[in-house]
Structure formats: structure tokens, C-alpha cells
Amino acid sequence: MKIAIKASHYIKYSIVITVLLGTVFQSLGQQIKPKESGYATTNGIKMYYEVYGEGQPIILLHGAFYTIEMNWSEVIPELSKTRKVIAIEFQGHGHTPFSNRKLDIVSLAKDIEGLMDYLKIDKADVAGYSMGGSIAYQFAIQSPTRLNKLVIISSTYKTEGWLPEVNNAFDDFKPEVFDDTPLKTAYDAAAPDKTKWHPFLKQMFDFAKETFNCGDSNIAKITSPVLIISGDNDGLDKVELMKTYRLLGGGVAADLQPMPKSHLAIVPAQAHVTLMMQTKTIVGYMEDFLKNK
Image 1 (cartoon, rainbow, N blue to C red):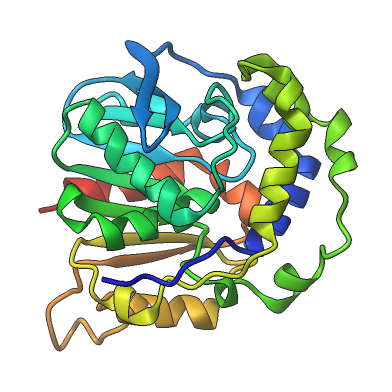
Image 2: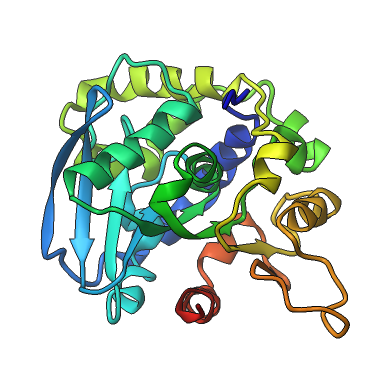
């Protein structure tokens, strides 16, 4: 199956909001320690992972420039009460070393399958936020037999899934703004080689210059149940989001036919970053969705 996909403009949006509000995530701190952590050799790189809890596995995919701690510190303690939670850090992020391997979503999704092979996990649920959500969509397309259920938080499978102002507002954004931010602090705290900061930024900005589209037909072929969680003002185009939900079998009159296996949740009064701070809401939606057969 041929998949036409590149990186996305939405990373520019993630960059700015993370710089502005990254202190929020960083201040939360990791509340529990992993029972296991290490590096999986996958797809030509060494990728850092942490494991919490016991039970049905779920893999967590963070947003652009985030670490496990910044993105999932409040969610992991809740999910790990009943599940085996596996959190990763993508190429160049957090503890995962910088690599000269070109960043693209196909490779990043393949890294997830490699991690599963390394940990001897046949199938898992996958949840992704922002950039991690786009990679999660790609994983569902290229590795369908490895996926149970999919959770997408404030993300899209195509550039046009974001509002035009998101795609166009940050064309002149300069990487120098990162040098005195919580993102740099988090990078220095985890990176194996702190001298790779600027090469990492350049790689991510190159990644952000490309548009992407996983393809409507590929999304429509996803057979796993999908939960989409979006803030009402998180930068996603809600018309496009509804089109996505229809591709997944939703948007029907469920009084007249069976309820779709995929679900859509729009959380009121939430932006892209603040949505991820609604731990009780997000975990509640996830637990209800994941426990249903």
C-alpha cells in the first residue's frame, strides 16, 4: 500500500504554544517512577521508553518538542492503575539521542512497531497528542495488525486539518527563541548529548516545512476503533474534524442505527495546550473508550 505523507505545518503551531506555555507541563513533574526504562534499537536508532503498571498495553506518543514528563506526567499515574503504560520519546526528543536520519512520519511510526518487537508486544492500544497523534494515525495505516484501539488528542492526519491561521501564522518564526525557554531546560535535563540542541532544532524546522496528508481513503480503511478528543478552540478545523469522524464511521443518527465503534469528544473552552491539562476529562474519556469491547 502506497502512502503519500510528509511532515506538517502544525508543528509551527506546536512550537509557539509550547514556548509560551511549556512551563505548565514542566511544572507538573513525574509523579511516579517507571518500573522499567531503557533504549530499544529500532529502525536504525535507539529510542528511549518507560514502562508503568500491569495489564493491557497502551503506548503513549508525545507532541513536538515534548518529553514523556512534559506531556504525560499527570496521565500516566491514572492509566497505570489498571494498564501497562509504555511511554516513548521520539528521535532527538528527551532521552532519545539525536540522529542524522531524516525525520518523517513514516519512519517515526515504524519506530513504534520496532519498539513493540523489542518489548515482545504483539498488539497494543496507541494514544497520541498533537504530533504524536499524526504519527498514531500513520501507525494505524501502516501497522494495522499491531493496533487494538487508537486515541487521537488534538491532532489531525493532514495539514488542512488545522485552521488556515495555524498553518500560515508562523512562517517567520526563528529557532533562536528556543534558547531561553522551558523546552531548552527540559532538553538539557534529559538529552544524552546537549551539544545537539541546535542540530535538533534545525531538523525539526526542516520537518515542519513540509505539508502532509495520510489520505482520506487510508483513514477510511482503519478498522480499529478510534477515539478523537479535541478542544473546541484548539486550532483544529472542526469542519475537517467532522469529515475525519465520518471517514471513521461516525456522524450518524444513532437512534436509527447502531452506535459507531469510533467516538468523538469536543471539550469546551479548551485550546491546544490547555486541553492536555484536563487530566480527569481526558483519562475519563480514554478509560471508558478503552474498556469497551
